[in-house]
Image 1: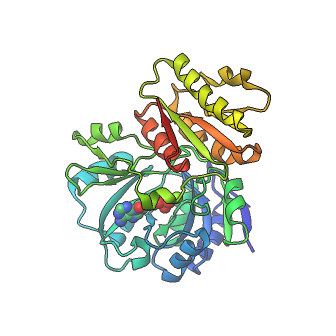
Image 2: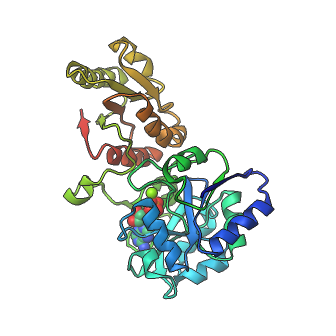
Image 3: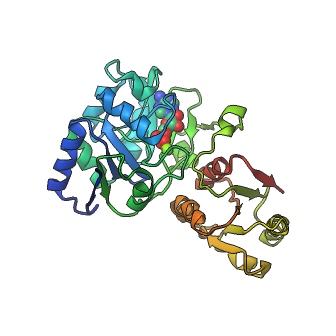
Length: 349
Ligand code: AMP
Ligand code: MG
């Protein structure tokens, strides 16, 4: 049985969260909101509970989990020898959506880090998340609370769609703020390397560290390419431009791709930006259009992205053609998710 409880993020009800913390301590699974996406929480020091997290999500055991903490004391329980550069980022971003890869403490179960000698850690900024971790008196693993491969959940409704009946509690704390997962950085690498672009753009990290950081390039390897991630059931084609400054000619290109698919008698949806979505109105009544928001506000695009990817499955179309965004700032994270959601089905002009 899954219990769904509603908690206000502005004023979290301590009684409800004490109950949730008891569930965690007893080895149970509690889905909760963070400022990025909803997480599936379990006691990071309880091997049995951690194994259940992998099982419930259908997550491959070689994909390590992020450990979530609520205080700097807890950092010492999971990580060792923290370099000055890491402290700089910690002071600047925590609580917040930046995950650091650090040397791990021995006591942490192998399952959490998938056998690596490093651990990924962050302190989330959502008051419900912080309070839950604090009351649990243990660090929590908290991968996104979705079935492995699906778009990450940004509302409790998304968690219910994927995990109802499989977890003990789902805390409904409303819509998440960033809607994109945390940025993961390997601070021990020289130069520091972003392993996953996320809610904090690389440029902001560079300003804090005053060094250039590398963003690990997206490679479509035959192994990872086969597994769709962040993906709705509906197949996706991403139409990218080398340059988005001439939106008129870009829209013409996207339309060509749409028409090609319509001519194959496929039902098509277009996922576009606010600036361009009205230009797809003349493609016929069958073509449905969803907007991700303005190109000038990539924060909002990121925030809406996973919701729109879930919504597209309700349109009853055979394929979704998705516009690309400029790869700057949060645009890097948005394009990372879109390419993966499409299983690298990308057309580039
Ligand atoms: P998720 O829990 O779905 O947000 O995914 C967590 C991500 O963190 C995965 O993509 C992992 O590859 C990454 N991760 C977790 N632990 C480590 C680590 N020790 N070193 C590098 N990456 C990690
Ligand atoms: Mg995930």
